[in-house]
Image 1 (cartoon, rainbow, N blue to C red):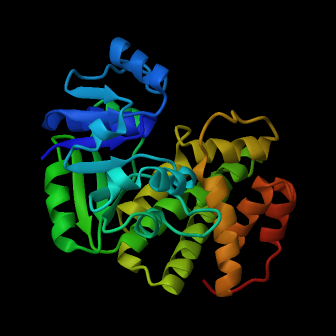
Image 2 (cartoon, rainbow, N blue to C red; image 1 turned 180 degrees about the vertical axis):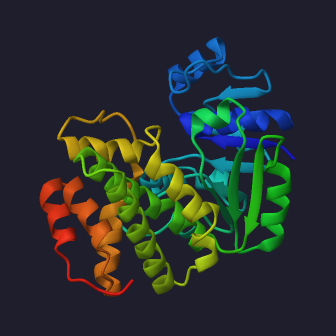
Length: 319
């Protein structure tokens, strides 16, 4: 089987580099000039000091990339509906693996639901877990979850995508895997805010723990499995994203806490996801104070100091 990665951002490029251990990989990008430069120079500004192996074939032709057997869609969650609608002819009736983390701001859907609604006859899976693009591109060990309702497809793709440095675990709970990957970004923003305010490591640990409780609360409400949220796609990714300066979502939270500008050219999936979660919580009648605070601070409805004061003044309760 052959592989194509659709999306030449940092994660998509790192994934293509990692999978080149298995053989030829197509890497598709929509910007023709950027793709041409990547093809010629074999390096990208998104991954400093990393060269593209010769086994990675870069293209801006969607038809060329979609001739592969397995398509990995490394497209940001908020852009995925438009991408899917624009390329239905090439994606229909295919096995698709979404490689993004987030809930759509307009619908609250995760990546597999988006693909199912926009593309006829597709089998969709989600690849997610604790992973930084820079680590993967450098060949550092990484473990991810591949989740799909079709257990046979999950097992087949798991076998095909696993390499010497990339370990794939299979799951039949794509909803739980998607929620873990999406919600941990919101909690990471809240943790960044706490550190940015100078509240200390103990406060970060408290925000992480209560944020994880909210992840489970929402997961229970929509039918996700707790064991999925306790695995790589949930707790594993939460731990990585909330504790490392390499996380964009965490750094975005830091900027909010410190009241400094953040690079607007960087994709911060957790910002839109926080708003989607806030709306979903209202529809489901759920109390998610950490995630609600992240949403309100992110859109400027409340200062970071005000939000943290409100969280600390909440009524005492049993854990």
